[in-house]
Image (tube, rainbow, N blue to C red; front, top):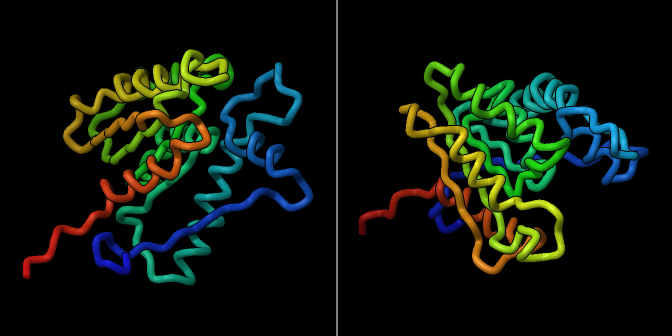
Amino acid sequence: MNSKQMERAILVAISWQQGMSGTASRVRDYTPTKALDWTLETGGAERHLHFLANRVIPFVEARFRTTAKKRTFVGNSLGGLFGLYILLNRPTLFEHYVLGSPSLWYDNKALLGQVSAWADNQQNPSAKVFIGVGEKETPLGSNITHDLVGDAISLKSQLAPWRFEHLDVKLMIVPNADHEVAFPTVVTSALDWLFAQPPSIP
């Protein structure tokens, strides 16, 4: 922003609930369904979405010079899963979505399984969605059980952006990156895609 290569923006970060561990709060708030095989509480995404829409966004808008235009959600891992949940349930709450290494495997891919039906029921959705994942985020690439790369490719395909004039979906696979390494590249690339200023003419 200081170099005028990106539009000015306000960054709003949401922490975990006081009195809970970060992991427990994150798992509860970002998961859309109750997974019976998890020991931590799950399935609180709808409540967290209500908190964002009715508490956080009005709080920010009342205190800062903001606009709903280009409002952007950024989430990684379970946060990326939660971002997809918002897109499917309140698509106009944000105009842009940055989904870093989304945990689409959660609860036997329950949310990923809803995407095709969502796309079939849309008239003309309007959003820009950036999906980013590390090349090594597969069982073969690193010591993980789930194929985040395959799931990310499936998500882009099921969103079917070619069917809609105002739905723009970009998929980035970060070379030689695992789950811990990918996100910084994903988020900087996404912000450049969404907010880059055209070069000035001398």
